Amino acid sequence: MSFSIFASQAFLEEYDRAYIDLQRLTQHAIADLVARCDSLGERALAEYRRYKSLVEPGRALGVSSILEVKVSGGARLLMAHKDARLTLVALGPHDAEKKWDTLKNKRAWLRERIAGASRAKGFGNPVDGLFLSLEPSEGWEPYFPGEESSSWLHFLDDQQQAVVEAAGNAIEEHLLDGRGVLRFLVLGGPGTGKTVVLLKLLQRIRSEGFTASLRCSDEVHQFLSASLRTVIPRAEDDERLADLLVVDDPGSLHELQKEFSVRPRTRPLAIVAAFDPLQLDELPTSADLEKLKQRISRPPFVLTACYRQRASLARRVVQMTNVLARSNPYLADSKVEDFDAKYGDVLQSFNTLEYRYPRGAFRTLPIKDAGLRPHIDKILTSRRQWTHSPPILLVFDDEAFDDVPRGSGLSRLSPERATCISSSEAWRIKGLEYQHAFVWLASATFGSLQQPFQGSGERRYHNRRLLRIVASRARDSLTIIHT
Image 1 (cartoon, helix red, strand yellow):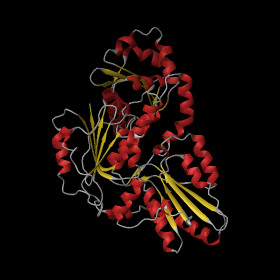
Image 2 (image 1 turned 30 degrees about the vertical axis):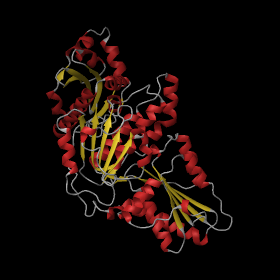
Image 3 (image 1 turned 90 degrees about the vertical axis):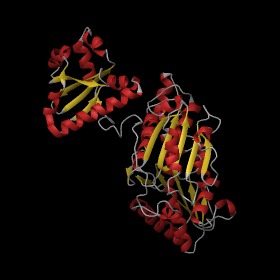
Image 4 (image 1 turned 90 degrees about the horizontal axis):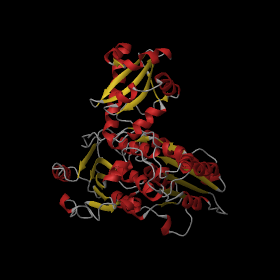
């Protein structure tokens, strides 16, 4: 028997206020409950104790039972059962029973919570839950042939290949017989192959005798040129308009609008831009994105298959965005509501990915942990290190550090082996890839990635948002080190 999981608004608020470890334990308790119910059906509910003081109020409301789920020994979770529906009613600390037992009007309290319940999203699966799981994962050994070499940059998954075919055919037809400007958007979350799609389009159109060039950051151009050992034509190096312009990761929608405003008089032109809206320098509103799509007058290609980053790491990036989607830089109710209305949909979008690339290693360690140095040494001495580009990314939170801590043994790595940046320089590595990433975070920053927050201010909020770039650059392993 399969149960539907609902949650009262009060339960969600109590969950948000709970400390991180209690959130994690609550997630696992609910996941265990769901797994038991899937296996044993209604018999599984017999394993949970009825909450005595709410038996009669529950019956009066037509509820079969109010059950108590133990979390972390003392903390309590109350759940209402009716038919095939389980409603998460309340969550409290170890002494929550005292408060629940002394409620003056238990029936009204229970009615309000059950009546306002909605389907619980993100509960029941501790991997995809509403918090950044701190559970470690192991396994970054190569899985696909050639992935530790530059040949991996040529690989296209079926979804990316379909985009290249559809866009390539349309571009060729337009350049031969069309007029004006043909514009395409390729949107997708991290690791979905946006840059490789652009490179394949550039290669295909040039092979047909047309001119094509790439607009990208200096860092991305250097990375691609060095890795592929070829000359990639850049728009910045030629004043003439190419037949095809591909734009990789523009800094902002305003920057992209300037590219799209080009209007050649004598010949057709095609422009393809690819980006992740959540990694733009300025977070676009839902209205901003809709205006851009209307100007294109054709649906964007949306990539959802993440295969350039291992699943265990990619899921952490998604979890970080889920936390940010429920966070807010403001405290005043009016500003909170305005921010949610403008950005809520955008923060939820481009965050539902399929994971094609298994394994991945994830660790969080306190900076004084005795196991930190052996963990670093293990990665540094692994035999399969990239040689086509620096394999190591080092990032230090400039709210707490001036540089990478010397005691880590990583501060002396050469530029050929490691790229080192501060957290406010995340823009420098947009579009780049690294085999392993080490990130030092202040305790406040570390906490903000694990549970929703409010009142951080705009600058700090967006700095934390752009840590998504940092987390998504590591392909094989990510280590977060915190104060």
